Image (cartoon, rainbow, N blue to C red; front, side, top):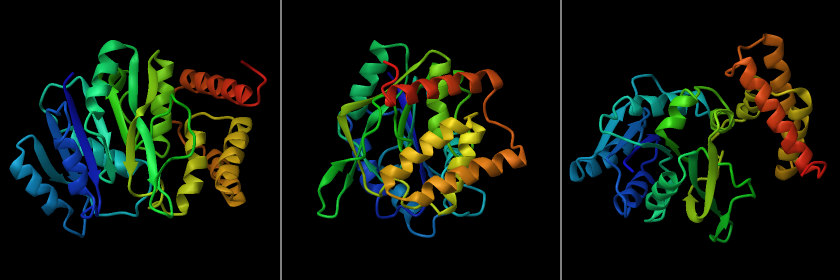
Length: 287
């Protein structure tokens, strides 16, 4: 299956070369790779450009807007779309890949085979590994097998079209999977595909992001019981009570402002039911 990759990159001079090296070593090569340099102040564009000169299917472009604070959500999705607009070769799979990731050589061979074997597979990826204090690569905190990290997502063309692409909002990498399920697609992370995430997930995010996560829950149509459970679970995992408070505050403020949801009422109803069932299973009240 033919695929194209879009890599949003901001000040990734230390990492972009290793990321591209992993791509050119794939046993199943992409038809196109678009590196979107987001107003970097280092040599990101120059380094990526050296790869583009060697491999004609690699292209480098730059965002036109001025640099903003590095927050998850709209900014990275806008960068993705600037690259996506330049994809002009046939593709069956589209990939959003972060510049600080290292993927194994068979990464896209395995994923392409999985998508080809299962037409209902809509979103797929590997498993995130991060380095601990001793330098050892450890599996990132346990996550559901049907959740794919936003740092390395691959979408089928049918699924990407059905969900309306990526939302330019905080929570884009959660709502995409929920909408995929709404439209009857499956999502899956493959244990055999270990992705080394060189920068800890969320490390570059501003503290304001925690409040935005609460806002994202509002935009996805969550209810208070879901927000309370999800926020408490994450706060316990992080060992930080303020995470719980900031999420609730973000959700409350979004409601006060009456922000426009990024899902339809029908989709929001599906998402609430799906999340409630997940909570009941977590509490062992439902099989």
